[in-house]
Length: 355
Image (cartoon, rainbow, N blue to C red; front, side, top):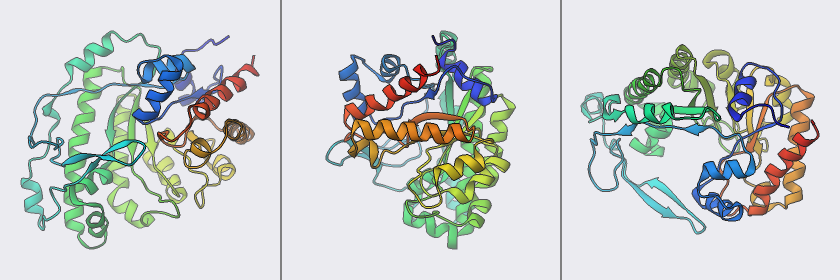
């Protein structure tokens, strides 16, 4: 019999305390979520998690009340987006980069940047007031270079890190300033009810790091630490997402930034051997993810999925590592529903052996 709520499981992991069962989370695109819900009789992601007994957090947001960029298709950063059909689903992608042709820091400073005051935090507070306390509460975000590339274009973004240092630092500081005040406003308004901040930066690609450790330490590490420090001031834990071959950056993420959770563990990438990650970092950070969504989940059998979950669990247990079982990244629409069910059925199978 379960004795802890989903929130209590996450909090126990943060405190390095025992949990009553293997903790799980759900990540999926809308298309696969709809397919699984059709099978389990749910209506949204929260219903899916209840049906499959998954410990996913609840995410809350403030309401945007001041729209600075009003052209059709633009977001609050002035990035024009369009819905791209990739055959089996859709993604909103940037198809315009408002800062692409900027050549001076003066132009950047004069841009109409969003502000934390553009949001109303009272609706979020009211929602939290009625929360039942069963699920962990996640709010706030910080993923600067992803946003930078939407503002400048990806190729120009990487070139800026090499050749246009003043431009890069100016844009990154604007992005940081907004998110610092936005996240602080969330934490202040919520008065201790936020448990988790989502921070991200894709530091690794499929075959190696996306940039050098020196570049990371110059342009990204200081502000990541400042944002994590802000979260800790309010008793908020830090969830960190980086795709790919990111092994080189993990010590800084743990020792300097001070992250609590590392996601998604793409263990097929170079340097990301799961037994080695568990051995070297398992006592210092909570691992999240790991169930491969590039090969096993979309193209394997339910038995392949089951075996992989059991293997990861064995690796983590051997090294006494804390682990939240979840897909390696968002489940994609090509993933068979049977494989999604197999993932969480295996979690239940593992938990049944504990009782």
